[in-house]
Image 1 (tube, rainbow, N blue to C red):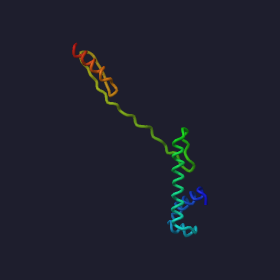
Image 2 (tube, rainbow, N blue to C red):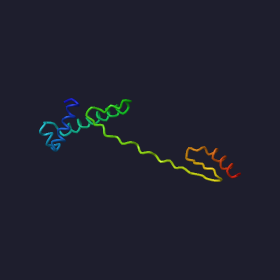
Image 3 (cartoon, rainbow, N blue to C red):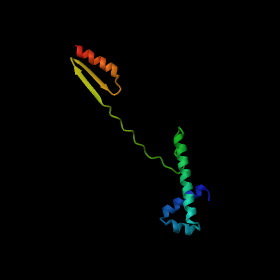
Image 4 (cartoon, rainbow, N blue to C red):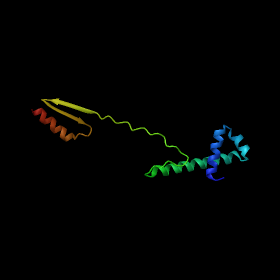
Length: 110
């Protein structure tokens, strides 16, 4: 069988609920052959998925389903509010420390 045929055979076996030994006996193949071909189907699916992820259009590989993606959670940025002498300054992790030091020296001198 070709790879697509084995893919269908694996799906058929899963859907039927048969044990692997019963399926193999019915189809006239050894369990070693079944596991080998199942491995090849998985490898091909993973390869196709990796190719799809590397393409910019992000096409979902044949036989796969696109899951509904969730929006990325927003990151809450910590801030520090400084109030002194009628001045109000808010700083965060992106604030230039040298500039903040100058502002603090200026506020201290008031």
